[in-house]
Image (cartoon, rainbow, N blue to C red):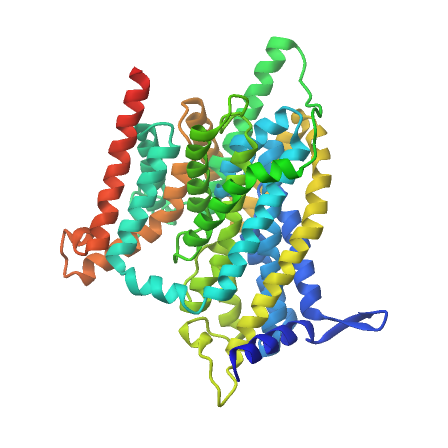
Length: 531
């Protein structure tokens, strides 16, 4: 079989699977129905403050396995449903970030910086349209790269990134985010340090838990949901409640947001946004192809690079990033959405997850059997059929079908969600608080998780009041375990060399860049302050 034969077999495997029902005599494959159902669920979950795609995937996976069983025919419907959730949650995640300033995921935090100010100015529907167009564009681009480059790109990256290089890359990521996003390098480093401190409590490879103060609760560490949702969502909710109370004291009433200006997305708007979308799509795709990095860094880099370009080329009438600039939404949404397709490059080629959503795809494949992600998937055998390669092209077809749903159903959904901005904040904020705490308890099922989340919420509120960005904290918490594991392995593999981070040219360059970013940013801020 040639390459074209495998592609055709994968397409037919998706569209001509087991018939679920028929419309006017045309059979509808169960694979199509599962991708559609997963996409609709993902949109609802992504648009709900306090929930996210990985949460829905974690709950759905055991139900799917018990329904479809553990034979090879279950691979496409189960993986298709999970892919649908991943795609739907990506586009739906912009809704709470724009309308309510409550990002459900760390990468959606960057969307709040310009999306929420636009909503407060009465342009929520326009912001949602921009978010959808940018998200769908970035997602489509990354899927095209996945289809073409999956057999080659991840293997090349893995060949040039060994343990010291991966450790240095993670350190560069943290230093870049601390310097650029943290408000100032000092505040960014404080936020990053707090995140690393929190993630290292009760964890590690030692026989005894670290920093647990002798308590069983801390010995198990902080669950990632309590830290991320606490700092991002509960911190934003506490700040919103504080602002409402202050507004009530000062004016005696609560203000309401009213629509103003043109809410449509026109061709002239698209032309202005396309440079930001294109650049962020390239950034997100490159980040997504790197094993274990994820979409948060992509959203941060996309926003930062877009901000730098905007400051150099904007006209006097254009708004700055952070003040409601449509380009800020476009840069962020294109970057974080373009990660989803590229994330499957290391998943399918190397069996290494790029983010939390990819973890559940690997778990599903390993649980069902008959499909083992890794280099063997892309062996184009001619004498015999490689069934894993057929499944891979079937998954590509599922992703392409989900993209069609994104452009059609996703667009309709985003256009209608603007009405939610009319919900009074005095009713919305307590509802978001209750919903977030409920989501945390459902995932953790222990009462101390609620107390941890509230504690992190207070921390997030304090950081906002001190003008310290919570994003470096969240990214450091997410990458902390990966950083420690990679550093331990690199240190051991180098024969306990204390200078293992400078043992190869690539690792040395990455470490010098990490130091240079902090020094350059601090010097630039001092010069701007003295000017």
